[in-house]
Each structure stands twice: as structure tokens, then as C-alpha cells.
Amino acid sequence: MPSWVAPHAAWAAEVAGDEQTTGAFGRLFLHRLGQFVDGHMRPLLTDEENARMAELMEPDLAELADAIASGGFPPAPPADWPQTSPSRMKGPVAGRIGILGDIHIGSKHAAELVPAAISQINRLEPDAVVAIGDLTQNGSREFFQRAHETLRSVDAPLAVTLGNHDMWGGAESRPLGRTWFKESFAVPSYGVHQHDGFALVVIDSSDPRPSPFPPFDLLTGGFLDQPNESVPGGSFSPEVLSWLEEVETQGPTLMFLHHPPHPYLAFPPLVFGLDENSTRALSDAARRLGAMGIVCGHTHRSVRYELDGVPVLEVPSTKEWPFGFGMIEIGASGWSFNLVQIDSADLVETASTEAGVLFRRYARGEDEARSFVIES
Image (cartoon, rainbow, N blue to C red; front, side, top):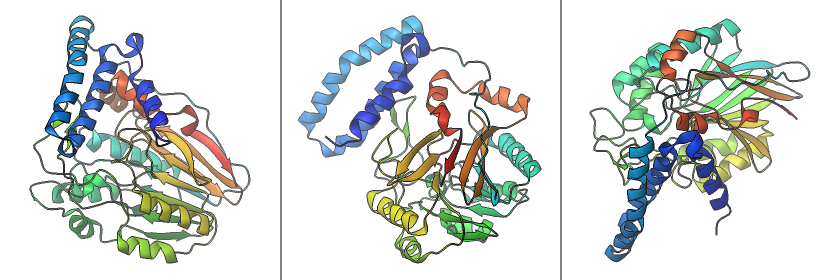
């Protein structure tokens, strides 16, 4: 059995909670997660095997229907913020970096929350800002134009890269995300951003290949009939792989990309993160450059772990609960991270009404991933 199976199962159980905390919602989540797996496995199984899987699910369906009828779903909790104490690195600070996670321009609340976050970041006067992919909700030309217009208000030097939602969408039936990105931003989606005293290595992990499956809706438990957002997982193109082998930096270095490295130990483990080959290339480059850390988006949650000894951080989406952006300080002695909540109480309270208890359990992640110091 692969080593990631037990951690993935533990994550699913933690998010689902129990009857007292999530009611029938937790059971629905686990059921829909099973349907996601079954839906992707169906073409690989025989008719007899698929029939047996459906038979095994029938009792659970009946119990789930009874639980929803009797207990219903818990209401969204009041607007809140997971409390953490601010962290500051020791020693001189070479640079301060703002992080915009998965802004999804074109989605609900993004038009209000993302500009509010940018305004707050500007007041903090960082030396650089990184938008870490999923700039748009569906990769359409219109949404790329809106994303560019929104990000133009960032005062600091800006680095941007692409995510899976940016690849395939809108009215076109082909992956034109990179075309619209180049037209709107007129900058590369990967590269070294060398600053005075520190360096940021931004890597494009987006994969334009179409998924063999349409997007899956966890609420309905079925695939959607809509344009494909491309493979939800990530992969480095041959061009990016070749560049990454030769890249060099000066000073303390952090690496940024949309997808977390393999294996991604949350929903779902194998088709959502960076592929194995690209993960090896990422690890090799991180060790060669002496990178202090790797920062990822994509997962809309706060989690820390390591890739072959290099710290990895997943950051939440700025436009979703807990409605924050990242601030990093970096220097020769290490780096610190703080997740900062958008300070518009009205916006946060309005958007919080759609952040149910289950999503908050997921997006909260680990308390220690929202504020920490890593010493070199």
C-alpha cells in the first residue's frame, strides 16, 4: 500500500468531522468523495465491477438520505478568523513579499475581495508581490483582461504564473489560457525575479492537456456539462524543465508555483497535485539553488510539510474563507510567513455567509501554517 494512503484517509476523516460538528454535511462529503473516485475509475473497470461498486454504495445512500432528512445541514458559522500570533524572523530582513493566492477573477466575491486585499498589501509596502496561479475562474479572454486590470493596481514589482483554471474555459473549445495570458499580461509565466538581496523563482506548472473527465461537482455528486478546465493536476512543460535545470539565483531564494508537489495528501491525492517527474525536477532545483522554501497555491488551504528537506507551504485562496493574503519576510537567517486577513469587516462578513462549517474545517488546515518562522 502506498505510504500516502493513510495520511489521505486521515485528512478526509478530519475534514468530515462528526455528527456534533458537521451533522449530515460530513457524511455527504465522504460520500461525494467516494463518487468522485468511482466516477474516475468507471472507464477502467468491467461492467461487473462497476455494478458491484454501485451495489456496495446503496446502503450508504439510504443512510445518508435519512441523515439529511432528520438532521439537515448546519448553518454557516458567524464570520470569524482562526487566531494566530504574528511571527517575525530573526536578523536583518532582505525583502518582504506579498502573496495573492488563487484570486479566481470571475468568481463570486472576487471582484470585491481581491481589490481590497491588494489595497491592504500596498499599504504594507512589500518589495514584491506574487500571484500564484488560478488568476481566472475559467480561463476566458474576458476574465484574463479583468485579472490584468485588477492586478495593475499592485504597487510593488509583480510576478504572476498560471493555474489549472486558467487553461481551458470560456466559449472556446480549446485551451487558450496561455494565449490570453500573453495578450493581457505581456510577461512570461515563469522566470527568476532577482531583487536586491533575495530572489524569487516562479514556475509555471499549468497543464493545458484536456482532462478525460469534465469537472466534478461535489455537491451534486456528478460530472458537469461545461467547458473543461484542463487537467486539475500540474506538470512542467519540456520548456520549463529545460529552463529549471539551468536557472541560477543570487541571495536567499524562495520558489513559487501553483501546484503542490506529489503526492498531494488531500482531495484527491493523485490527480490534483504536481506529477512525479515534475516533483523530482522541483526538488532537484530547490536543492541546487539552496532554496529556503517552496510556496504553492491550488489547494485553498493552510498546510506545511517538506519536500526532501525543503519546507513547502500551501496558501489559501484570497477570495475564500479565511479571506487572507500572505506576507513573507526573508533574509540570510531564514524566512517568516503570516496570513493576514482582509481588513474590510463588511466584505468578510458578507462572504462568510457562504463558507460553511465543512469548508472552514478544510481551509483552516494547520494552525502552524498561518504564522511561522523557518531558520536557515
